[in-house]
Image (tube, rainbow, N blue to C red):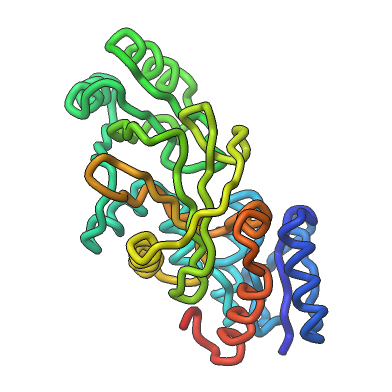
Length: 284
């Protein structure tokens, strides 16, 4: 098989993936997304399967779509990446699958956004519809804060800030739960603990082993299936009435979860990728 990994830079996760491939005697090309040029008028299939590991959601999405059009199998699939990259599409997929999620409203205007925040109740959380690492999230505690944040977003001018994604604030106990799902099976999990209300590792959250329970595993597996399956990280919130699915990530960082759980996530990812590539199907 002809295999390649599309990456932005060689992070620890990618090193672990290439080490797992080498241990299995599998040859694999490295394609820097900054150096890729696609000729859309003369598409050629150069690889049987490509693993998408771009840091940029946009670059990863473009690579997956063009490679798929050339007949190349990508992991994750373009449709799964598209859903996970858009919080609105993710929420719609989760709700359609009947999964418990935070109450979420979407507004398209400043005044309606203020109404949405009021309907959700204070505090509320305002998120961009795309993005990762906990960036540009705002917890809005009162009307004055809502007016200020919404006006700032509207004046930024980018279309990314012209849609207002408003969620109820879940009073989580200083942590959330990240579950790694590979090929439909929850294989590892960790608490992401932080004194800050945003628990992403990029914002200072630290990983602690989470003994993967039946409830959390089943919920994460259903969430992964809802967005199309593949290799995914599902973020769960501990609400007073039970677990909620918050987000699903299509290009997960897993070094910290590997260290916290002791699970060889890179090895499981590579084994699943090889199985998918040999089958010729986007997921199993």
